[in-house]
Image (cartoon, rainbow, N blue to C red; front, side):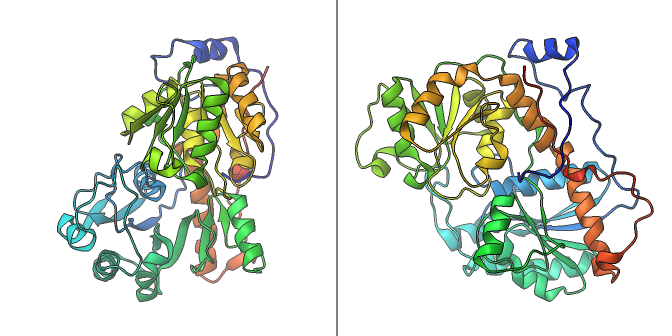
Length: 422
């Protein structure tokens, strides 16, 4: 998430709420009864045509692809809020929507990518490959059958869906989750953090555009169980590559003597260039959603020592939703989503990472959960999208920046809800 401008005065939790945070780890954590209520959906419902990621299947087990997960969760929450949602994707997709329109299948996957284990290897894809081209060709035809003038066309694979947008100029084309540093191509763009937006604007020497916005990644509370007590091990969860900081995570394990569990796509020894000490470092492979939940909620802390300008870092929020503090690098999206000294620590040297690992147990696991749930849940982020879509709809209809809005009752869509810290 980008730091959404605006503040909210911290309030002490009521006694009943404090007790609820401390209940045993086996219960599912519920949204705070005392928190600010989430905004109701707009009276005028919206129509979305959601283009899925061409080379994956919109299902929970494709958790290694944040774009795929955003498609899944966006469809779920917007359908639940009464909007019309068409999902265009793989025949095996498991997605809640108004209508699922299958346009790619396993036969096309096999023809394009051959056989490979995507749970062990990184995803194969190219915006010019057969699968992507076929996806776009079929999507153009299927969207034509269902669209109305002024419907939203959401391109979750960014420029990989450009051909579909060009074929439907009467639709409002939006890139709804920019998490890379390429120049935006869509007329309307949503960045996942201010780190990404400002980097792109600076790199491309672009003037800020009021029709763009920052809306963070979002998470389904049903996927994460809160635990008030962590275990004694550290976790690294993500692609097993040096740019993600896997070598630093191993160094922290060696320096502290703490067990490190490594989960994700890739080969640890091959990436490191040596065999790590197996008494300290355990490879647990690709994590299904329920396994990820158990791994994170039982950890002392999550290590995310990414060495590049991380656009967001979904695993950070996933860990916090389980109550687990996060030890991250101090740049990119981490500077916005990891509250230093509250939900974790942000570090720049190895000795800082080591100190953070040794002192992670001093942080409030309840604060981690509260921060993540109140700012990054589906229910918290959906109104942000609705505010944004409603505003750019005025642009498309010719009213633009100067359009009046006599129905406005608040300007809370950018408000941050900070956790209560003793």
